[in-house]
Image (cartoon, rainbow, N blue to C red; front, side):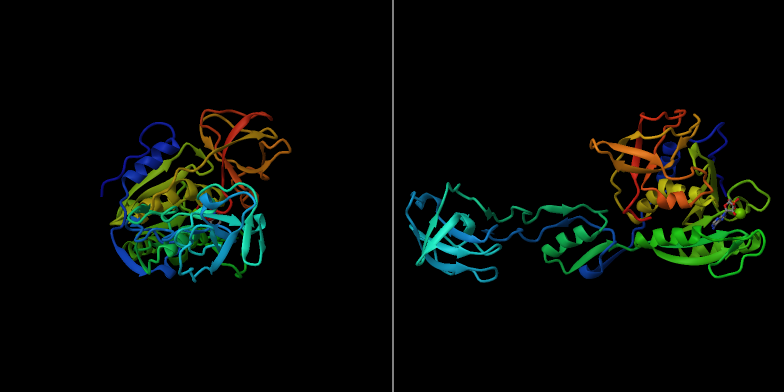
Length: 413
Ligand code: AMP
Ligand code: MG
């Protein structure tokens, strides 16, 4: 098998270079499913969706009040109330000169009427309504197709169906929707020291947190997870599971064993059964990261260190999964905030330090470190609400300097 030549070049690989290289080697799965709209949350649209109808499909009122003809209004003169239009129960007649109709929010604007006056701005006596103040023609009327016009493309292929997208699809009356088949991912941890929750720790053991955390992220992304559990540092066992993943899954994510220690077999096994690029990335945390294929199954080898695993998942695996799933990912919004304390940094690697950003009394953004920046301290990751993007060539950050960051709360992790 060919070995992807990724770290023969001297020095570490810049993040964007590695990411773009990886994305260029991945293709979206082609399979699609037609599913009921009600099951579509978190799926990816396989095709663009055009509106089958105008939304709204009829002119209607934006207020509770009276529908009338703006041109009829004369200061001090009343309009004859001739009927009522309720949501779902339109007024059957026509509003003639000098007439008005009681109307509720969302109810159809009667024929003849062109404007609505809020009930708070009207006085009514014995079926005669006196609007006060000026009335602009068309006021408080929602026009047909004001939201979406029939035939208009509402969502592009590759859109992730979140609750807001789902509501819009529902407003179009669509019963079924064509989506990409969700990805199936195999997941495993390697390490003789790893134990499952509830097990007793022998000396030198730790609990496996990466697999549990990554599984949660995958599930939040709508991905089906085949959890292979914890594997001992045993090349035979690792090989067997890598081949199993190639049969069962679109991609395999492993954690651990990608450094160059004595019990790091991931590289060796992948060289035997697949194509593998071991990357020493110019990022911190997360220097070692493996990417490749076993047959058609994409392979992502996360570092064992929990902070590194989470950060490389976010920076590299998340965009890769979007590519595989046919999802269009919008560029991450980056914010500028003022460092409220110094941050230690050496030039050479892009540093994704964990931070807590907040709005300061003057309205600007300020950021402090979320606890220890050691990549072995995972609790700081949970405390953080942002990742700083400290540029590769940058050195120490002094208090008061501007830094770039991305928000991480409310995403998938
Ligand atoms: P490795 O990449 O296997 O050399 O592991 C690097 C560090 O991460 C070691 O301290 C491991 O004990 C730790 N580690 C590896 N896998 C996990 C895991 N699944 N959960 C938590 N820590 C891990
Ligand atoms: Mg290990």
